[in-house]
Image (cartoon, rainbow, N blue to C red; front, side):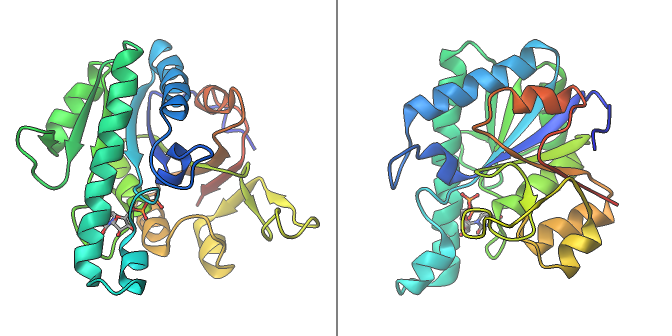
Length: 239
Ligand code: UDP
């Protein structure tokens, strides 16, 4: 169901994997350019955009732990990976003449700004795309949680999670052709049915602060624009 709501400020979460394109690792500049254009369309119609980018295309703490590294060290590496992705995205946005800035939850003087909520909100008001990097700054969290946290903090009206499929399904639609899509779910349904929407911490955070979530397919042309204009795409998670 569409909300018919036109949004003013949104928080968009992109996974690190989305930046890889067809490669198995790293960053594909062509993908970044395409995303920058989509984001630029939103900025062009006056939408304020906060961005959180994951780091899974480079490092994930849990995978590094499996390979023998200390988990917290691995999570630190994962968070640093998100800063690299954020730098690459800023670069693409700049090339497309879209004003942007990167903030990091881990201070990194001389490279990016340290996260500051009021500065972030002022930048959003000035139509700058604000990229929130380094996750929450803490190990054992994910960038999904960081997206919900920052979205709530900067008073975004909606958190958007870009995925490879066009919403949340009863089962993995790639493996199970009989799977059907949910148009709308409540936070508790997501939790009770253990649907793989976002990690539980992120869902609970959204539930407790009544932050609506929309899961949509980034590859689908025009989907993002349709959503901010109140259209129906993917799956909406609300109370
Ligand atoms: N990470 C972390 N704390 C955070 C956010 C991220 O420790 O608040 C680390 C964690 O190791 C994670 C990695 O950074 O695996 C990359 O983030 P994520 O897995 O969320 O990226 P995505 O799957 O969205 O690409």
